[in-house]
Amino acid sequence: MKTHIITYGCQMNEYDTHLVKSELASIGAQFVDSIPEADFVLVNTCAVRGKPVEKVRSLLGELRKEKEKRDLMVGMMGCLAQLEEGQQIARKFAVDVLLGPGALTEIGKAIEAKNRFWDLSFREELTHHLPPAPQGQLSAFVSIIRGCNHHCTYCIVPTTRGPEVSRHPDLILRELEQLKAAGVLEVTLLGQNVNSYGNDQPGFPKFGELLRRVGQVGIPRVKFTTSHPVNFTDEVIAAMAETPQVCNYIHLPVQSGSNRVLRRMAREYRREWYLDRIRAIKEAIPDVVLSTDIIVGFPGESEEDFEQTLTLYDEVQYDSAYMFIYSPRPGTPSYKHFQDLPREVKVERLQRLIEKQKEWSYKKNQQWVGRTVEVLVRGSAKDEGYAEGHDRGNHPVLIPAAQAPRPGLYQVEVKQATPHMLFGEVVGSQEAATIPLMMA
Image 1 (cartoon, one colour):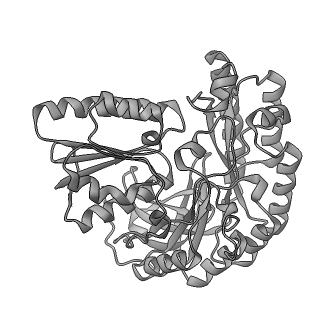
Image 2 (cartoon, helix red, strand yellow; image 1 turned 90 degrees about the vertical axis):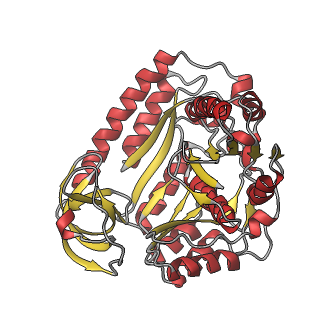
C-alpha cells in the first residue's frame, strides 16, 4: 500500500507519526511524497486551536473529492480524532480509519480490516511500545510521558490524550541507546508535562533523576518539552545544571502575567511562584535561554491584566515567545462558561506583545555576538549559500554553506544577530556526521 502521511501540530504528533510510520513499514507499506501517488492518506491532527482544525476540514474535503474519482483510503489520527468535533468531521468527509492518540498501535489492524475502522481507546501497550530509531537523522524525539493531569480551563489535551502515564525508564533508555547507535546527536524528551514524569508510578525515578540517567547515555545534546511551572522543581534545575549533555534551553509556559487571569485559567500557580522559578533557574544556569507560551485575550482579560503580562515579560526578559490569540475550543470549561473578547481587542494586544517580544529577542540575541556556540547543522537553508542549524540554546543559526559541507556539530563564532536569527562562521567541528549535505 502506497501511503502518504500529513502531520499537523506539536512535536508529540511528529513522534506519533514516526511511531505509526514504523508500524506501517512493518506490514509492507511504501511511503510516497504526495496525495496523487497514494492509496492511503493518513492525517495526524491537532485540536489545541481552531486554525489547525480548519486546515484538517479543508484537507479532508479535498480528499473526499479524490475518493470519488478513485479507490483511496483516508485515515485520521491524533487529538482531533478523539473529540466529538473530530468524529463529526470524520463522518462528514467519509474517513475510513479513525485512531485516537491512545490507539496508534492499532494501525495495522485498521489496514487489515479493509473497511471502516475506528478506535478511540487508550491502550496500555502504547506506553510499552519501542519504535525503531529513525535513519539518517541527527535529531530525534523520545516520548517519556503521555497525557496530562492538569485541567487548565482553555485546554483540550486532558480530554484528547487522557491522564498522565509515564513510560518505564528502561524503555526510554533503550530507545536512547538505539538513537545513539543510529548516529543521533540531539534528542528531545517529550510529554504534555515532562516534569511530572514518574509521579504516577511508584518506584520510577522523578524527572530530575531521569535527566541525569539520560545524560549518561552519551548523546551529546538533550532537550525537553513541555514543562509546567508547578512541577519545575529545584531538583530538575539542579539536574540541568549538573548534567553537561542537557542543553541550556527551557521552554516554560506562563500564559499570563496576571494572577486574576491565571486563576480563571486554573493554572495552579501565581505570578510570584513563576518568577521565583525563573530566579532559581537563572542562578543555577547563568546562560539559560528562556522561551514561553502566552495567550492573549483570554476571556475577562482587562487592559490592566494585559499590562501585567507585559511587565512580567520585561522582568523575565524572554529570549523568545510563542504568542497566541485565545481560541475557544469546544469541550473546554472556558468555552462553556466564559464569554470571548472582541477579536479586535485580542489582535491589538497581540501586536503590542509581538513588539515587546521583538525588542527583547533582539537585545538577548545581541549578547551572543562575539561568542562561540555549538551548532547542530541540519542542512541547506532557504537563503542561498547558507547552511542552517541551531545552537544549544535553540537559537536558529545561519552559516556559510561552504564552511559546513555536511550535517553535524560545529563550533561557530556568532558575527551578527537579528531578533530571530544568529549569523556566524565556523571555527571548528566535532563529531561531524557522514550524511552528505543536500543543497537546495
